[in-house]
Image (cartoon, rainbow, N blue to C red):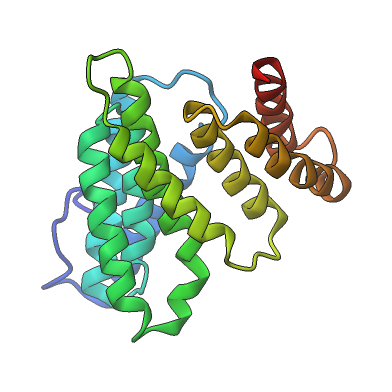
Length: 219
């Protein structure tokens, strides 16, 4: 179907065409994700990725695939990659509020809580970092990011990667607040656990080790 990547809705096409369109978009999505570890991605690639994410979200909504909130999380991350920080903050705040309203009715959504919270908190932090050179940077964004991540730390997490990622984000926030001693107390036990379970070559341990060096140099 030559129109599969530009189709706006699934009305008027049969289930086979819907599946083919969704599969094509999913393949594009996977291809864009393959570039996650590339240090510098051209803006047009990120814009194209964002378009694919919104197309997938649209098809999910119309075809009954329960992945709308998942694609909203992806879009929120992508907006930060595009340096649209304030747009990302507003978008991720709506997703967070929508999640809080939805989770009571759909308990299965609890499994993505960490991603929703971390995406919102990360956009707040990145918006602060991008504005840190102006006369009155948005400290309220930094404080809100800290509140979100402290609440997230109270949630049990058996996923070591998730635990390492949220520790890394909280420590970045604490560094901006000059709470270096507290950041070190938090990162040391996490780093040991990540090292034991994932090994020193894993990307999560590498970034924890890097930020620990940053904390140590500031003490």
